[in-house]
Length: 216
Image (cartoon, rainbow, N blue to C red; front, side):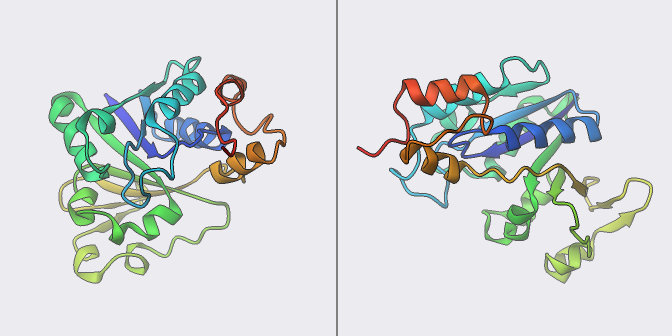
């Protein structure tokens, strides 16, 4: 099995998330991409994000017609602050025998990865796919990560990726980034503006029917 793991707040999930996931699925010939909403993101405090239940329902609605997409509530079940390293370890412990795991993140997130909990261990647990925008110049890992870490990686022209000491790669791949942000969707809803075509219709209807993102 080859699985992709795409985490995020998904507040709300939008077309950009779905398109990037679809392209990574195709590029790496994955069997599925699992969407993992963060229950308690370490960079946000309680009250700043919509309750997990609503974000879960929106993700489920967004992916329900794609058999290659699935949902996991692992970060809600595990409890506590949502750390990616703990999520990856949980999934690997449960499915390790038959699983090749690809952790998917954007280039901005990867450039800030040294702020993540146990980032060194995380980068050695599975493959990493860094989604880049058109025009992104791949200057290698040395421009992003410390030299004492990157010296154990070597570039493979065949794989077009950086092979680490535990046998997993860090890949940089260009995808179609749609200039859509969850924060702007929330703001448009708050201002009474249309969000048609920014998020799937079932998600849009869910937002409207449940009064999400309205002040008060």
